[in-house]
Image (cartoon, helix red, strand yellow):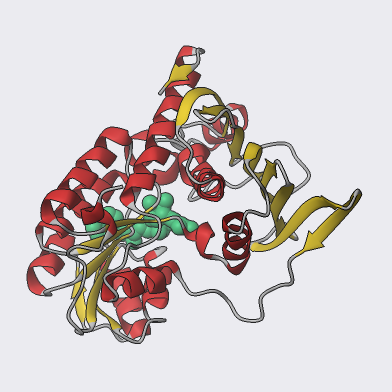
Length: 359
Ligand SMILES: NC(=O)c1ccc[n+]([C@@H]2O[C@H](COP(=O)([O-])OP(=O)(O)OC[C@H]3O[C@@H](n4cnc5c(N)ncnc54)[C@H](O)[C@@H]3O)[C@@H](O)[C@H]2O)c1
């Protein structure tokens, strides 16, 4: 892992408060809230091409610097860190612009439209000696952190198989908008939802090196709905993949915006280790989670259920700020974002050709 994009060499701010700018104010509003958890951080500027959204969010959070273009914000505000929260198509160019302006970058997932763009972003971060972090937000929940602590403590032994899933019965985000438009999103539920469950599994597994990928994509439900409604939709509505790693482990990945299943929303990551297995699953078809550990103790099968944390875990933005201010490596570095992009590219390529792809 490169030190220059993950910190440790040029990331400190010598006791200053961090000046933050946020580009794109959909999920960008969560970034503002996440950054504000840290006492040495101030969100001083926002940028959004939509002036109505810009004014509403600026007023809501009392942010002084408001810009209808990211470039104007970067030129005017002397920022330390920028959150890139626009549609995927703009992640690369805005990250390059922020790095060129001397900023560290927290880029939303997926890192980019494809791995080539991701490589360009990483190379630019290295050249600028700035950090690049990807907002793999599902790592930062209390449950995910508790599971990772058990992984690091050796409770599971070696992981050899996993299945990581995010399905929706019907849930195309902004149906007819940029999420379902390949030229703006790069893909469908795989690049939108699958990316989270893939990162979570890989992170818990210790990011083993992938070697082979077999993937398939389908679009029967959303395509029919889009055709009937006269909406744009040229990405998949369901993707599956089977990934093999250098260490022999395998991982099944599934993601959909439309599938004929019972649950409105189903998120589940299951990893089987030589000593124990884990399950992280969403509760009540929503966005809260449960974590379980399954093992055998003295010949008896035991199930351990994680108590819900009394207080929420710190945000990804809080941890990024802490790493920058403490001159320590940050979590979810661009290098891991790039591995995810390489896997997504391989899955789409395998889906296109019908053959496995060697990485
Ligand atoms: N980590 C997560 O859990 C999570 C959740 C939702 C979305 N996301 C990601 O965040 C990104 C944005 O998604 P969203 O749901 O907020 O989309 P959105 O469409 O709701 O919001 C995007 C905003 O960006 C603005 N915008 C577009 N291009 C711009 C530009 N060049 N300069 C300035 N502003 C621009 C738009 O006006 C809009 O307000 C996507 O990459 C998505 O995958 C991540």
